[in-house]
Image (cartoon, rainbow, N blue to C red; front, top):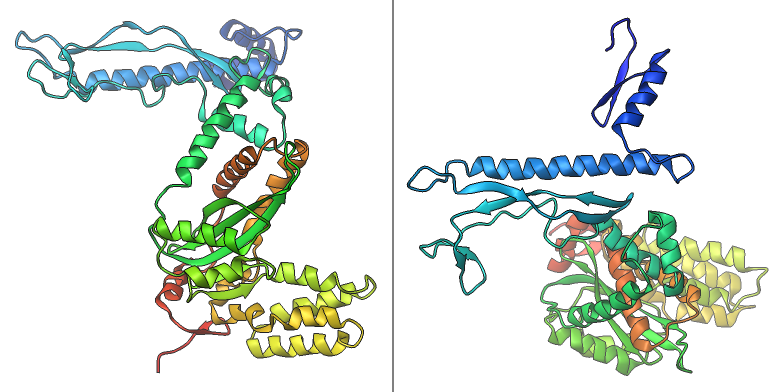
Length: 451
């Protein structure tokens, strides 16, 4: 607080007046303290933020080095000389951040005990003992971009920005002096993503899944005539977390394509049958599933079924029909679900027999969810975990007018789902997953009491 009652604030270490005549002093203090760009040279606020970020980063790195030197102050040779000391400065490094490029340098740490390296490349002293060398956690070696920027690059590409527009998009976000971020970067990234997908596709699947969600998604391929069908398999782990299990290039969702995918999962460690699988009724998945996991129960997706039924009805009656379909799967008990089912059939069978038959043929497998915890119903009545994720995938696909090749399309889907998985939430009532796996019986969503 300044004398005379004029309050003051600190901006990056500069005390400035905040009222009355102090406004002029504040402006002078800021101008003398910060390298603020002229109003005509660009965004003043960005310049202030960048300058502040540079100062804070430098201070943090210096504090980290000082803490290391202090913790090794006791390390001395036989003559009483300190063995871990500061020794000059490393060359200045430019880090690309969310506010643009920030330059930073730190003190060099010299450990006189280190005389070489062992066969594993670890630093050792004259007795061959491994010595821990200082390595900054804040500013790791070879860091050139912050994590947010590393994630920004694939995010822009996968959300529909073409490689030709990439430089312009990055300059708009980070400024014209943003180095090393170009279409060539994206080309290299795509190659890296393909290797990531290959490694991911061979990983071990040892573990237990309570639920499966399966679906097939079709894409246009610019360089080929046939549409590509990507088979997607997701699961709910024993901890109640959603997980992408497998992706494969299928042929029209055929039984053989799904059989190959499921057999591959089993060979990689997924040997225990999931308790329940959720999918559309038209998939070859249902023919392949019992050949690999014979005890897994079936649940048809209500979203797909509703669309298929309504497609066979006149638009005039679709709103009423949709309301009555919702009444079936929203019923609190199986008995009430049956009543709603029968009511729909009675209402529409005479005029729309094909629609009613489409619904009736899957009557029991549409209501399997009643034998599982009520907390899980919102997750297991539909394949929404897959559908919601692919809304983003389709956006990218439309923006780029299809992928150039089948491999590129499969890789793109993998990276998008990998990105989306970071925000997937656990299942409601995730603690009940263990009961499902253990075979505990549920009736109308409630656990049965032991006799």
